[in-house]
Image 1 (cartoon, rainbow, N blue to C red):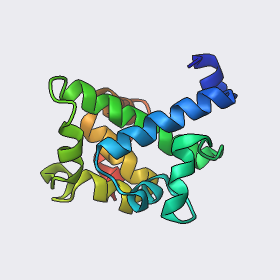
Image 2 (image 1 turned 30 degrees about the vertical axis):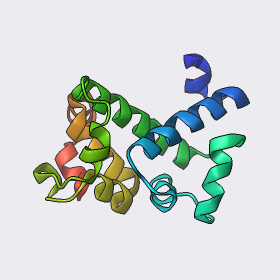
Image 3 (image 1 turned 60 degrees about the vertical axis):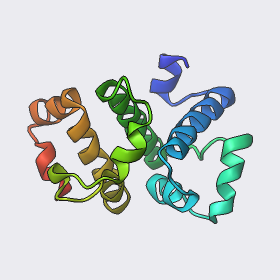
Length: 146
């Protein structure tokens, strides 16, 4: 995927389809049901409509959804680097209660907290993201769970 196109938000249809399939495949690998995927992505409609995104339709092109997808891609990458020898760990990790997330599962934090929940989980997994949040914006990821 072309970084310049991604940064400018001008992804081609093929790039958007590729990104949609990649993210949804990972959510499926995590064991998420269609209802959970829709809640995580803040999509409206019926769970059966998720099938069209897996085949021939990209996710809607709106800023809120794009931000969620960007956070999910970073979470996917952080899990991959945190557990490089166990690609299936994401499935377990997403549903396991976590003391640093107030004894809630990362999936619950992300669904209940919306974009803030995604950022909170990302801060927990990715120390460089947490550093950027606390250093450059003078905020702390701990305060995001709010």
